[in-house]
Image (cartoon, rainbow, N blue to C red; front, side, top):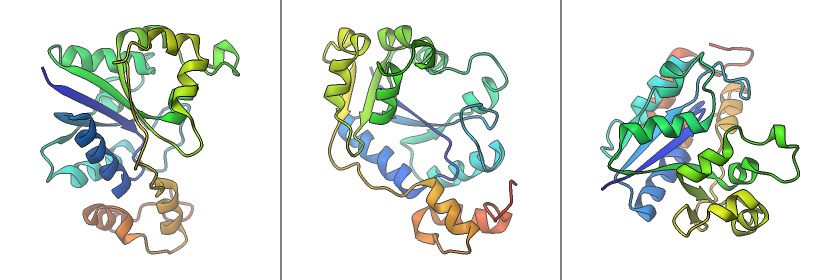
Length: 217
C-alpha cells in the first residue's frame, strides 16, 4: 500500500515554496507521490490571473525533473463546469484512482479551521464536510498563529473523527512566506522575482507577458 498526497491550489504561478513544501511534506509523511491539483479558472471563490492552460504549462515545467511529483487536470478539465465543485468529490475521485493506497488531502491549517468553523453560520461552512472528514485523511501544514490541535478540539466534527490517523499535523519548518500574489505584484510593478520561482516558469512568464499590469492573459 502506498501513500499519495493531493496538493490543491491555484498555482498562479507555482512558486519555489510550493515545490519545497511538497517535497518537505513528502519526506516527513513518507509519501510515494504528490499530485499537484490546479483549480479551475471558473471557480467562484477564487479570482485567477491566468488561464488554466498557462498554469498547467508552468506546473509541468516546474516538476518535470522530479519523479515524485505529477500534475492532475481533474479540476481544470474533468470537474470544471460541473456541479461537483467541492473537495469531497475531488477526494472521492482520487480514492477511486488509487484504491489500494492511502490518499491524503494536503492543506494549510487555515483551511482546517474553515471546514467546520463554529463561528460561521452552518451554510457558510464546507459543503459535504461530514462525509469528507469521515471518509478521507488529511495532511495539515502549520500556519503562523494557528493552533491546529485547538482547532480540532473546538470542532465536534473534527474531534469526533480524530482517531489518531485522520490528521497528520506538520507543525514545524513550513513557515516560509513567498506567495504567488507577491510574485504577481513584482511582475506587475516591473520587479525582479526571478529566484522566487523555477527558472523555466520565470522565463515562461516573461515570454508570454503574464502578470503585466492590467493584463489578464
